[in-house]
Length: 412
Image (tube, rainbow, N blue to C red; front, side, top):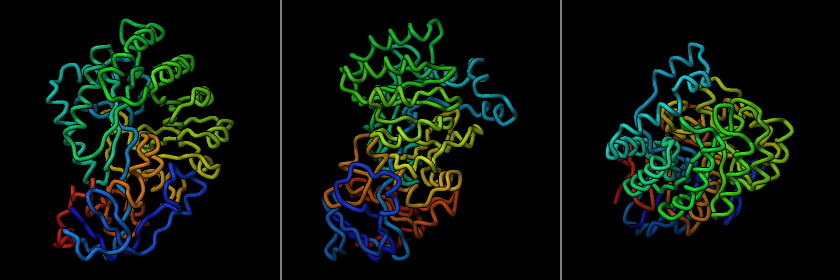
């Protein structure tokens, strides 16, 4: 199928083709000039109108951007934890909720009691909502299993989800999310070490992940997970510095981590080394807002040239959010970022975390045609916070979402 998107007021493009990522002190180099995007056979074919295209899109007054890449989600999961949110907003700390059997353990119980079809169906509904808000690539994680068999089941459910949705998906094995009952952290890491070869053999997981926190694991466990990842040819990702400054970032950098995620309590001394590294700083304004967490030094990271990334952290407890436009709006307001900085963090740099930036995350000839037509200029995305700006979403060159009031823009 060929598509010609014509007359756009802005087309967001990188300063050069072939960039795997763009450090945030260069975000201002993204261009947003009027223009067109031509698509053929699922690929971006050029930046001139194609009068012979099978489908033409009138993008007058619109911005055209690459599809959003959500590189940190916890799909698929079972159920929700709305009652915990009420506890948190009335003053109960998440750590207290977790120690009382809530949090991750509550989601593990829900997953254990849910049938496979129920879990996948819920996740498909959320993926459809994500698509309507412009997410064309997203990460899935395990982490709500808390036993060897249940973690392998969660990874298998992620495979099923990926086969059932329009978007491209990747899988991360979050094998050390919480310490299961009946184990201590060291003992569970022994189980993880034995599990990883089976994960590699039976799943398409491309990364290992763990949660370093007072209610999770330690920096020594992070070192061990790094060794496991390196030994099995997997990327290392890590949830770190969410509630406390555990100084996990230097440990992660020494282990060649692909990303460090959360960073609300990032130590000032670690800003410079992280900014200088080929390790993404994945910031999650959703749980920051909903959990009244500290705000990470996002402005400092951007100014220092870090590979900054935004994601939803979509999960049933601390961030039941699947809208990347909402995350962009929160980031611009909370971090003091420009719209270009936020869009870079939600597209090319996020694709790099998932090793997809050669094919996704920017509008370049030859790349997969995951393209969004927004209903207004770029600046409206964070400004009209809560509004869904996505009028049309193409996935692999096919119109996968067309908002009802934008159908008139499509013609043959």
